[in-house]
Structure formats: C-alpha cells, structure tokens
Length: 467
Image (tube, rainbow, N blue to C red; front, side, top):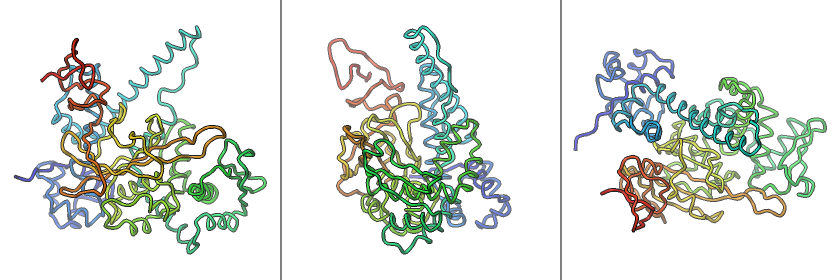
C-alpha cells in the first residue's frame, strides 16, 4: 500500500513562527534547502517521514503536531457543528472539513467558538423562559460565556504545557530534596521560607473547608477530612501562592481574559498546575515512566504522593510538551454525573465539544476506587487507543457520601501492541456522529444515516437505522 502523503504547510509554518525562525534558519537546522522548505509550507510538496524525523530531532516536538492526527479533534468538532439541525442541510463532507481545518485553523476554531456561544445562548434563553414562567419576571442576565467556561477554554486551546511552570517546579523540587516525605518537606519549607505554621483541625471545626490561610497569624489550617495523599498538593499550592505569585500573575495576564472572575479562575488554574509539577517534576516523572507503554497510575500516585487523576494530568502535560520518554496522551476528569471537570486533549483523541461523552467509555462502568480498569477503545475509523480508567473519592461532608471523581487517561495504540488485562470496546465520538447500529447506549440517532421509527418492534433503541 502506498504511503499516504501529508500536506501540512500551514502547521509547519506556524511551528516555525512559534520558534521565531526564518525559513533559511529552519532549513539549515534540519538539513534541507530554503526553497524546498518554502514549497512544503505552500503545500506544493508533501511533508515526508524523513523531514518529520529531522524536525522531531531538531526541536523535540511530537510528530503528531504536524501530522493529520493533531487536527482530528478539530475535524470531529466541526462535524458536531454541522450535525446541528440548524446546519443539517449544509453538512460538509469529511474531506471538505479536513481541508477547512488544515487551510484555516484559526477560522475553524472561531466557527467552533461561535457555535458554542450559540448553544449557550439557546440554553440561557430556555432557562430565562422557565424563570419568567415561574416567577413572572426576568432575572438579570449574566455574561454569555461564563467565567469558568472562559478560563477552561483558554487552557484547552493553549494546551497544558507551560515551560516557565515546568522550570520553576524543577528548581523547587530540587530544593526540597532529599526529604523522604513530601508533606514533611513542604511543611518545613513553609516554616523556613514564609514562617507559616500548619495546623490540622478536627472535622467539626472545619466541616466544609479543606484549607484556609490566615495571613495575619501566619497559620495554615487544614481539615482532617483531607485525604493523606491530597495534603502535599494543598501545601504545594500554598507555597506557590506565597512564593511564586509574580509568575502566576504574569501567566494570567498573558491569558488576556476580559472578565475579572475568569482571570481569578485562570490564576487558580496556574497555581494548581505548578503545585502538581512540584510534586511530580518533569525529569523525575519522565525517568520513572520511560519505556512504559502503559504506566502504572497507582504506582506513580504512591511514588509521587499525588492523586491518580493529577498524575494523569501530569502525564498528558509532559506528552503535550514532547518530553522524551513520555508518550502523548489525553486525560479527562468527570464528576459522578458525567460533567467534565477537566480535560487535556492529546494523542489525536477526538473529544466531543458540544455533546456528552460516549457512554461506552470505561469511566461509566461503576468503578471501585483504587481499582483501575484497562480498556482498548476502537473508534469507527479504526483508530485505537489504550486507556486506564479509575474512580477516586474526595473528602466527604459529615453525614454524606464522599464525592466521586472519574478519571481516564489514554494513549494511541501502536499497531500490534497488546495491553494487559484489558477489554476491547468499540466507541463513538458522540451519538450524532456515530454509525454503530447495535448500541444500546445510543441517545440520539446519527445524522449520517436514515432513521426509521418502528411501530411494532424495538431494537437497542426505539428506532432502527435504515439498511
């Protein structure tokens, strides 16, 4: 079979501009002529495997950043956009959407954000109508894109890799060594550097809050409800807020979010990322997982004293940063209802942007905390991913069960590779884009096939796909 040609001129040009290089400089560094590089950027020559490898070696990038796999998420999101009834008569072919995503990626993302705002507007209008009907008056309307959504969109669009965060975390992690217990090392650092004392208080004294810092008395109060494995993270986060506020503020300003509340949420997001990086620094984590096709999440969690879901986020971050020895990965964290709490795109996995996740994902299997489940996910286009799903409980309020969090990490499966103790399950991106006819989890019929509603027979759903 002939090798499929990759035309990625726009992506290569954006990479070069991001690195601050001229065509001549990049051509010299990867060993090609400037004229040939110019032809590649203008899509008059394909991006060969040899050039991809040279780019990867010269700039330590993930080759999927320049291959079609990286744009798969954009194409799938555009398919979701055109599956909406408003645009159903304008459904574009997959090749047309792929050309659009490659030729005008910024325009494609702009269209997705516009559609997202349209969907949010519909939801708000529905809520407003219900409120008017029940109260007889319209409440004050908030901003169309809520602050939490603005901050989450920034992190998702920018990506999880922030070099300044990684460098700062490495320095602080080195300064904390060689303490054996991370919590003790962080507690000592708080006292020595900031004169802050830690106090663990009974649950009846702090029944709701996990942590509170009193800047007047220089004391940090932590509830005994906080699990032991989460305490080092909370201490690291406080160290970040006290000692690295200038870095967090600079990154937040660079995000350039207009809403003050969105800026505050963004600032907290940077603090969380730096705290996680302090406990699982880049070099140490990469060395621990080097060569592992399926890292042992629970072992890493114990080794770095960091919750499994946070370890997943760190692995996906290092994969996105092209750190040697760490495979590109995607990660998601959901609450018990399936709502997205955090997600890190990667490895070419097509996240749904405007619809729920496929119900066949193993995070919905009724997982037991502390017992990860390995699965092999097969999409309709035969792309395969191996993943690890797990559940974890947070600190519970008195008299209530602990809140459940569902986390999943996945890597693109190498051809012929097998996983240990895994099941194989076909999945879809979202029901409207999935052609599988034998799925009992389907919530909506697909836009890609004719649907027949039957009067006298019921299959997996209350309709059948026309043959």
